[in-house]
Image (cartoon, rainbow, N blue to C red):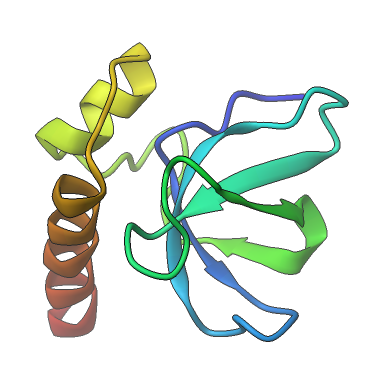
Length: 97
């Protein structure tokens, strides 16, 4: 499975449908993405979702270049507060253009 860590996705199924999350990892079976938004889903307890239940808003060619997301990709620890702020900045830029 491709490494999706640090990509921004939108949930398309479940009770969190429409929510924007950051991929913080892949489960040990490599069948699900681990998603967090820093508010409802903390980094310490990410939501596991199948790849088919999310839509990628960024991809490997069009990465969201934010220091927090870069830290996630490098495997460094990130706080929930920093992740919330990074996703808020992404949502603002995503809705504008």
